[in-house]
Image 1 (cartoon, rainbow, N blue to C red):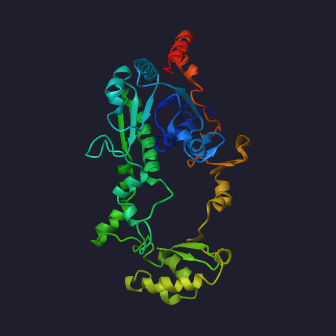
Image 2: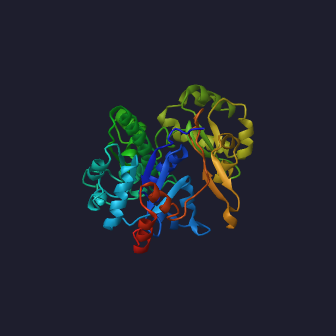
Length: 391
C-alpha cells in the first residue's frame, strides 16, 4: 500500500513537543522525516520520566523517524545541511525568529538552493510583532491568549490544563500549512515560507468564546458561562463514590429528557433562566450525589442525551470506543524496562491510505551515514566529518 506522503523528505530541526508532534503525523502517513540533532540528541530525549535511558515523552512523539547528528554552528555542518535541503521537500524548525538567519540557513538562503523547498517555522509568537523573539512555553502562551483566565471554577484562581493546547494546536496548524503549501507547489512548482504561531493557534480556538463576548456585550467570566460551568445544563456533577458525570445538554430535547429522568420536570422551562442556574445546579448536584457513577451510567444507558462519566486515563485507555478506534497503543514492559509505554494512535482514519504506525524510534544519529550517502557524500567524507565532530 502506498501512503499519501511517500517520497516526501522532511528535515526536522524541532525538539520537545510542537515540532515533533507535527512531523510524527506526517511520518505516520509515509513522509521520510529526518531529525537533525546535535551530538547529544535533542532536549526531548532527556525529559523525565524515563523509560529505560530515554524520555517517555520522546517516545510519544518520534516514531517512524530517522536521526542524524549535525553541528549547525560550524561551517561544515551548514554546508551539509544546505546539500540536504537541495534534495528535500520540507524544513521544520521551532527556533525563535532570527536563529536560522544567524546560522546562514534562513528561508531566503534555502529557497535559492531549492526553489521547491517548503519552510515551516513553528514558534511561540510568529515571525513578526513585539514578542516575536521572546521565549515562552505553552503556559505563557495560553495565559496571553486569554485561555487561562477563563479556565477553572468561578471560585478558583485561573487553572492550568493538562493539555498543551497552544503547542499541539500549533502542531496541527503546521501540518495543515505544510500540506497546503504542497498543494500550491503542485500548481506553481514553488515552495514557500509557512509562518505558524502557537499563540495564533490558541487564539483561533477561542472563536466560540469571542462570539459569546460579542453577543452578550460583556467579558466572559471564569466558570460562569454556558459552557464553562455557569449553567445547569452544561456542568460536571459529583457522584456518591467521589466520581463525576458530565452533562452537556444545550439542546432543548436533551435537557427535557434529563429533567424528566431525574424527576425535575419543572426545570425544563428554566433551562436558560440565568437567575435560576445556581439553584438548579445545587439541586441537581444533590440528586446526582445520591448514586454512584456506575449507577448513573446504568440509569442513563438507554438515554438519548449527552450524559457521560468523567474517566481517568486508565479507564479511557480501556474504553470500548477507544479500542474500536485504535487510539491507544500499549507496549507492555517496553524493552524490559519494567514500564508499560502508552502511545496515541492516529486520529485520522483514511479509508484507502490509513496511517502506518511503525513502533521504531531512532537512536541519536542512527541514520547519519545513510542520509549523507543519499545526499551524495562519500564514505571518506563521512568518516572525516565524524572524526572532526561535525556529525
